Image 1 (cartoon, rainbow, N blue to C red):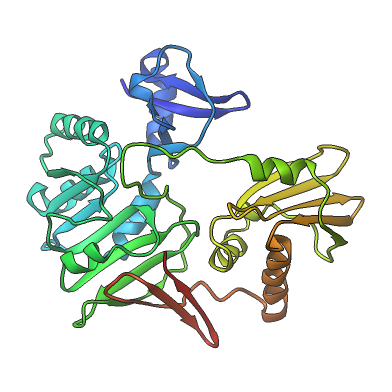
Image 2 (spheres, rainbow, N blue to C red):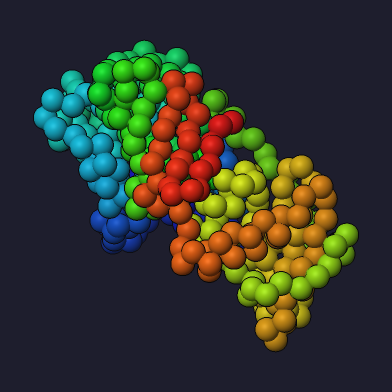
Length: 345
């Protein structure tokens, strides 16, 4: 019986299907994501009663989102698909059911994940080709559809090289909620658009090791007084929950970490921002008044307020429906009206 991690106030707590078959059936048939790995600890290998701190690193994606990604790929009975991010093998099984095993290849960097997925797929009569490799590097595959359920930045050049003429790729951009659908062009690049859907997948990895995050700048944001202290005309917001705002901010300053706290340290709402270059910000809202502390080489909260001002002046943000032009090297240029953004490394 499968195992997974459930988020609780104490951390990620192990759930074992055999302990409560009813709970397992409800979880399996509900349209939500089941986290199967936290850090480098897979639920299959965890001891009874385990509780972990850390970030989710593998999961079974919610079924509705998988189906939508496959719809964007415009699959037909002749499609040959590379499923990037095998994970549990659930999405691979859906593709095998739709297209037949011979037309499906799945790839994941983690040998345990591919081995476990292969075993489960075989139990259900599916035998696709499974590759254990870094999907952002050279790929031993050629076909006309790539669907990625891991996020990348930029688009791997190997994907464009592996696609046949007029082939299509569907992926998300790391750190954003952007789903990009693009068709290969004669020059080796691709052209498409940002879909109006939203999705956020785990970032692709080059190896099985999980890089530990440096939380020191975030801690500075929590406790230090700013080099610059001033007000803001806008309420303190949960940036991560504002998908388009978070995406626009990520395009302007990739790699910001966010935390949102309610009712802490005497403030009604607190937002923390931190970047690896040492920049940080803390916004505190008390009785409708907002005070912003900022430090480091960049003023992160100023960038956020610029995004929100654009939103209010234009009545929206330009990312949804933007055209996407991808160079053969994988650099993405987004355009909508007079707005442009370039997404490289």
